[in-house]
Amino acid sequence: IQQALACGFREFMLSQDFTEIHTPKITGIGAEGGAEVFELDYFGMPATLAQSPQMYKQTCVAFFDRVFEVGAVYRAELHNTSRHLNEYTGLDFEMGYIDSFEEIMAMETGFLQYAVALLQKDYAKELQILKVQLPKVDKIPLLDVDVPRIGAIPCIRFTDALALLKTLGGGKNRNDLTPEDEVLLCEYYREKGLGEFVFVTHFPTAKRPFYVMDDPHNPRETLSFDL
Image (cartoon, rainbow, N blue to C red; front, side, top):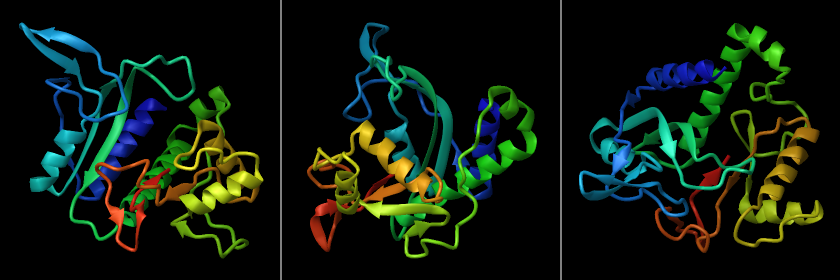
């Protein structure tokens, strides 16, 4: 199944005119905040294991437009939770020259649809052994037609998600979603028959002040999303 996801990611990205890159995993400094790094001695100089290919991806966009990588990621974090691993394989892509972040959301949706279809077609035996039920991401129900979507995936603005979460017993952090909030949101959409994926958009600027564009119509919000 890991093979299916890695191969499916590569096949889908290549079909969308992306270029595969291989970025260094020994770097001189961390690539992004919010994650601890593994430090090491590199022939007498300080170095770290790469916590993200982000800086290399952004550099490569300047001349390849669209890039992706299937590669190892290292983060010096305790991983006794459902959200953290200190070593994992990342599926990363970066797109340049876009008109809106909805284009990136659509690309993610397309990959998820491709990956789920591939697993259903060629890996049914493995899914049955593990008793895995794949999430729905391919068909849009006719009911709830007013729910905003990117393809088959519902999307909701952060402020609206916060208001909804308060009716579900969550939404206590006004600038971010807690792990419990994310579970509540996914359960809400799954129970409505809309699948368990959901895009949350327009996170507060207070939460994402650095490398996300502010919404010109409301500088307190960013043109960003999480899936």
